[in-house]
Length: 283
Image (cartoon, rainbow, N blue to C red; front, side, top):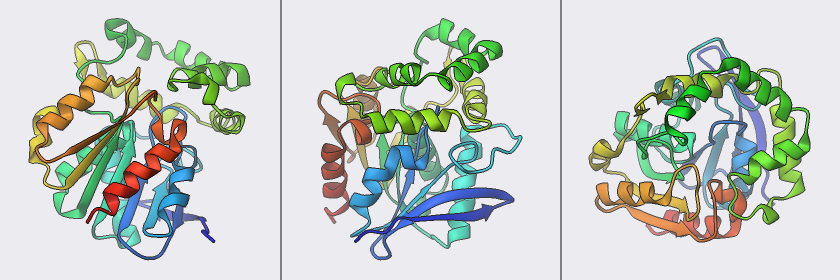
């Protein structure tokens, strides 16, 4: 029987919550996305699937889940440095990194910064492969309307119906959105300081003329075996972005999950697990 350990470590003074499972095989680190995400929300079904064969580590990044929300600037570089320090703290010299959305951008950035520490790379509907923010200039303006952003988070934290409606935007088929996931996200939104880290991240990344971080021109530097997984109907990171990223990284693989949005490991967990396990067990 798989046991998921709920544990804590202190990383450079930051109380960091993480889930671990499995004791043998290569280490797989699972990095969640931004917004209202957390390790449990993104990866709980995947931890269970991987743990019989791999050592799995899924942290709540600073500002998310149960981890501390220190008063810092939350940038991609902040998180890349944090992942390095976390792995140092846990004694992990080399690992496979899988990350969804913002977590995928962190995984790509970490691989470029510390190539010797990455065995394999799995970006999922990843940040860092598109040039423009959804909504263009209007999206840039909205990100900088602090009062509106705070009010939106406050409103979401008082209505499960609005929480469901927001999640339906990242699912292709709203009908498969389970009630328990809506409830878990709703509780996440109601945490103290929820949204602080993501608002900081957005302000840093979203520019008038596009996005600050675009890894496309550097993907060819990556030597780690790489699998891009992408929902066919992702509204936030269009499939064309994943196709271009795949084309720019020779030897990479691209697996497209049909009828699926931005959160494939939660919308199509069986398909996602099959694809990921096939890749990890291929060598």
